[in-house]
Image (cartoon, rainbow, N blue to C red; front, side, top):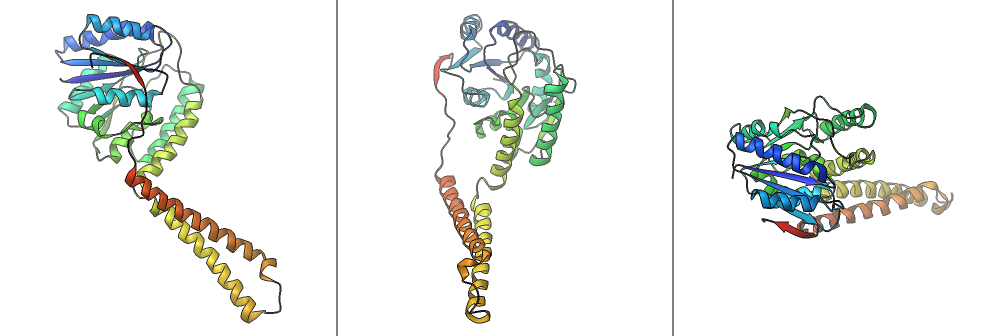
Length: 315
């Protein structure tokens, strides 16, 4: 199979039939072998009924249904596990991503040898205040922090080599940083393509302003994981040893001063350096233990991406 198209969705019933027909037209005109995997992330409208109807009309349509809303990252993770195509395409179900971009993105992976091709919505049809400006700030911070030079991390339209999606683990709200996860897994050939962005035709966005706050918090998380995820002792242990020796240094100074330099002076417990020393040594010990526990967890951890599937179609 050449192409697997993974589409996570939440309450997008109105757009599914039109999106399906558009994708099928592109696939057939380019003579691609393909599958379309819809992941219903706990929709409360008739999205699953529409997916079931589409699967009866088109054997290339597959579906996964969650019992409740687990989030886009978990939906993508479930879709990635089910893919069989040589190239995996992700796109949103709201018709803002253009399926006409798929053939070029496929060729960039299959023939160009890239590991990841990320869409860049250079011209956007979103609100300037609530989306465009915060998105530019977010993307700038993501580039500086991750070292991945992409203009639009949050674009839903992306293409991946099959090995990428079978290697990475997408959990929490890390769907924004799949290219970064791919880079950390050793897939360094990451590029981008300017894609056409379209105004939403049906419904309303499922993401509020809080997504940017969560995005920045996730950015800090992924920076830490990429730097110290496999060796937490290198951070916590180093900070713990530093703090402990700061406290030990103050304690040594107080002891020498009291025993030899000023034996008749104030009691050690009456001096502020005593509390600095005590606090620093306690914090240092706690940091060292945190690093030690982190090392144990890294060596024993398993995939913690959890979601409950209630139905599947053609899988």
